[in-house]
Length: 336
Ligand code: AHM
Ligand code: MG
Image 1: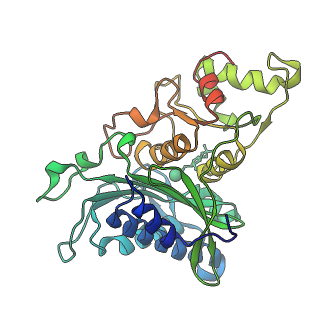
Image 2: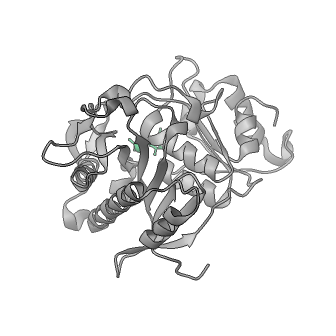
């Protein structure tokens, strides 16, 4: 690939022209709009204290989490950027209890957009990597001619037509799938253009790195406990090899590392409480699972494929194990 490769627009237009394309023009225009909003979010994040965007608001979101100023700024930017384009029937976000309908003054389209505007937002105030995660679905056919409702968003992840994330780190990247591979674009901030810099991505097999929040150990199932314990014993244990552990508290950063370098990410369900884990199915687990599968990896809730989970609520949580196929199988109870 020439470096830098084609712009995001050119890449998507070329995808659109391929026989059997999974990227029609309307989807391309929607993705370009999301990518533009991510550029503005990137700008706001990079201003930091100079832009008065750090710190909390004192309010809580529907999850009972304290909202950071940037959670709300990024949420509003994504709503404002996407509601007038005519591509969407509705939106849903980690930061809003209810779905967001497209105002009647704008034309409506056939897609549904779900997002986590700032994932890993506890990292913002300490200048660590955060991201924006998005998932795109088609509105059900029977929603034509009426306002969409929450139930229209409750589709299994295998029905996603596109998913991706922007990652605001040492470089600002957009990582995207429209169901035919995973591609990485780097923001050239001087000319304001996303340029293809890698892809199609394939998760390298056999990287001995795992990502888990060890402080939740008491909540793990026997299978997760055994998986982690085997790796902690390293060359002195049953696997006979040393492992490394990484935890950034930003799923976008952990998933990006796995896409590029391999390994496995785990945020399991709370085994003792019969709980569902921390991460949300519709706008965190599903888009990441789609990307990981498209890059040759696997994504499981510990028992079954995440993309087959039948959603029952907009903000429902699910256990997440994703990355290298063999590691996901081992953490889900198969023998390591
Ligand atoms: P957020 O969307 O409110 O930021 O929460 C999701 C984040 C993930 O990015 C990360 O994997 C996880 O929460 C970290 O949780 P913990 O604080 O338990 O380490
Ligand atoms: Mg999140």
